[in-house]
Length: 274
Image (cartoon, rainbow, N blue to C red; front, side):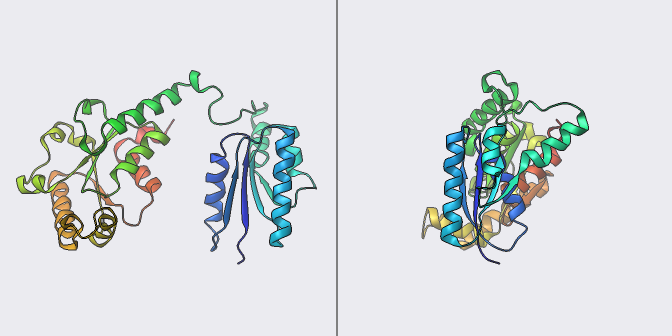
């Protein structure tokens, strides 16, 4: 299968087009060159991006794949017109127009997820969750854990921080994360700050070999990154979570999206319905 250039063209950030497009492209065994073109919201910009698509087709000898989320009819007509040499996949026309027919109403043709971020409670909740997760990253603070939705725990570099931030940014979840360290293993119990909130805790573990690789990138040749130390910490962390009855999963081969969805399913299933 030949590689293609893939354009993600949007009158907003392009994140929706790129996320959806990547999920479709993942079904095919090839990597592609990605080009995101956000904020294509005028006729002039539309003509310019069509010119870029056509030039790519000329140079590469095959037509690019173009995922679009464009709500302005005039702009969309240019990108989907006969002069565009790409294979254009119009997400709004594919999904919005059938829904308009089904609901019997016209959509509001809103650009982006929030028409006015300053007026969106959901947006403010997400910002508040991000601030909370940053303030409670890596055990920096044990204050206000009573208002946390989730507390992630695990050894250092097991994926707690990126998962916490993803939960905050995508789902508005106030996610703290807390490292399990050798002193915790010597005491044989959870850090005291977590005990009252154990029902909110979810553990991440990781294959010791992979953990050693990640830690070596951070502190090469250190005891922190030594394979035997990584094995010890992972084994002790898993044993502690098992004793305490805390659900956990391995981040070794799972994406952040998969980890976050599992956490929501197990701890906050209400957030899967909104």
